[in-house]
Image (cartoon, rainbow, N blue to C red):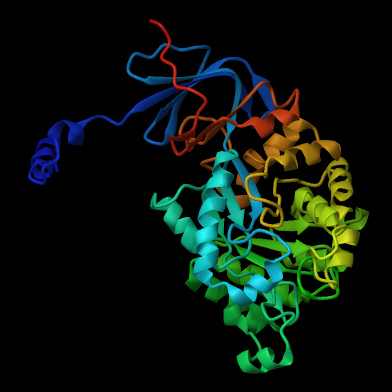
Length: 438
């Protein structure tokens, strides 16, 4: 349809023709500094031209563009939008978390997730990988349709576990409930054989997942004794990975214990999440297989701190939180020094949503350079996701831009002061809109 015909058609609906045929707006984002994610270097002043949700041009210096609305970010560093590879947008830890599972309906978690999603976006995270939660695929769709504000979501849906494993939804149920509901199966994300593993992946495809998560070992917050015992055999992991590959899925493996990590790595997973008891042997294996490590230091520190509070966690959970949580930061530093590929993730939902950027500080405390930490949340995160249209500020990529005052490579604390957020060319947060004098 020509522009004239389109204008006439819309005019018949009472819409002004001028609005219908107006050219898409163009934005010129002026940054005093630019974080170049491929090299990990902070460059000088640049102007980023944004059109139709994409980066149209990256121009050194302060460019004057008559046809573009200017956003001047004086004394700011612009970076690509950040990605948190491990969140749970449907929940947030509290002393009531365990009882709420019996009192709340899925719609309650869905309503909560809307606020969590907006907090995450406003903190500078334009993409997340939600690794477990039935709300996430629906929240993803609501965000992509513009119904709610939030980051771009890569959703796992229900995590895949074994019976009694970290993501078995019936852990802690009494005998009466267990007999009433019956044992969960592959449809519920609980498997006990390679055949059931394949069925569970196919069910996630049917449910609209983007990625697969398995719980390869016990976990901290599940209502079960072990936080690190292996919970999949290698053949089950391989069945998950091979089936996931058929659907274009990558597989993330929650894992704290060494043997569970070994089985997951040999089985072909894309990433190890948490990795608490990772040792030199596991690190060599990860480098050999090209496996990514997503440390989630924030979650470890959070649960270790909350374990000191009487009543915050159930008695079966508290010792795991004390023992495992405190170790993750040390493991992350050791993994970096040993050359393991590291990407950014927080396990937010354990801690409060919107505080994701504090993970950068914890990574730096662990001995990871600030520029490497920023790469972990930008270009490296895109590599883990298997996407090539984000994670860098380059022509043709998504116009995801975050800006902070000062230089976050010189002072990583700057990441806690995000005051400009753009996702797909839409500005969600800005300190001011200035039009420079001509």
